[in-house]
Length: 628
Image (cartoon, rainbow, N blue to C red; front, side, top):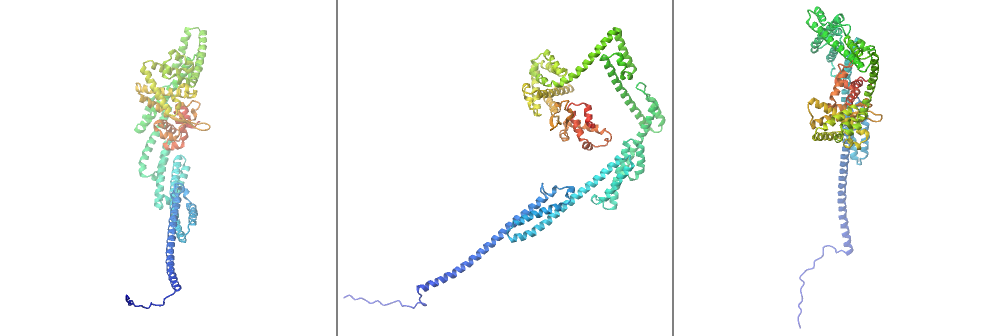
């Protein structure tokens, strides 16, 4: 039988290290280990969360601080440099009390910013930051207030001194008022010495001396202007030591001239009173007058020359006055003759009585010749008829002017080149009762131009198109319409404007001595339509071309001073003439253009408006005198 070998145990059995635990015991050990590990993990998690929370708090603080810092900056900017609310817009005396106005605004807005802060750190920081910025803001406000108030005080002090100086000079002939104004200047210098930069006694005295020197010079010149040369010399002698050297020499020269001219004028008056004529007929013995002057000033060439100059000027003026009176007398006397007045009626007029003897003889001879050709009764009958006819003619002339102003619309219709060429001369003359002589004459002149050639018609048509273009650009939109498409007022405006343009072109061609080119005509037309004026009305003022202003509304026409400044080429001449006229009014001779402009702006605007509206010289002068 097979033999089974017995295996030997080759691995020894060792004891387990420690007591072998039951499954329950093993579970308990694992739980404890897990519990210890979980605690460690929890501790690490809490620490990490704490770090994250601290970072978030720091971030929230940083954001709040940045926002608050920006808001404080914007608040300061708004209170200082903002174009609408900032202190930079507060000028002069209004800057007084700015701190009391701006500080509460800053505090109010800063409180609103603080109310939005959530973190204690931001709140603590903001308390200090707002205080520091508030101090800076108040310093800025105080600096601005001080600077503005100083400038205002300086301006007012200088203006006060200037006003007192002007018043002192204006009252040169009133010693009491002059002394009052000098005293006011002394008070002003003492009161505002600090801001005027004359804090020390010597500086104040120098400033006062300079002011008085200028006033004394002004007073002397004022007295010279008033032709009170003796008073000027007396005043100069009294204050000569108070006038600065740079002004003294020039003033002495003026005084010398004034004294010479003044004495010469008085002497010339005395000589004229002795030798001058007593009426318009007596001769003027200028040679005898000059001999009298030479006898008095044989050893003073300057006064002799000045006296003779005054005498000759007076003779020129007297001759001119005689000539004007003679012309007026001739116009009146011969005008009456032409009207058919009788010899008796002419002889009873003041103009005939005052007329030179030769004129009176000429008038008598005229009537005598008439009497020689016809019987007395026949002549008287004819004279009465002529007188009636003359009065009718005068009435007709007045009606003629009215018709001319009332028929611009019809003239606008007929002045079209195409319409004119379709008419005959007889048809145009047939318009005389409707259009009047002036506009009928214009039509005849245009009609004759169209008869020359087709080229002339084309040129006239081109000019009409140019007129319409420029009128349209000037705001007359209806200028491009046909007469039938326009209403009566629009046609009247076009007719009136066309007549002004044609008259201006005719004048320009007369000056040139030839026909204007298209571009030259454009310039003439443009000057007329650019001459805009404003016309006052009950409810609003309207702009219009000056040539379109009717006689009824001419008194309400004006041009704003800003428009005059903006268009010196258009309004400059009328503006300069207005200033020159105003300077001729009493008390205005020494005024500058700027002073006249400030004082008489309304009058200047009216005068310029009227000058571009067809007003007479008298109407313009009335505006400058403030009579209407």
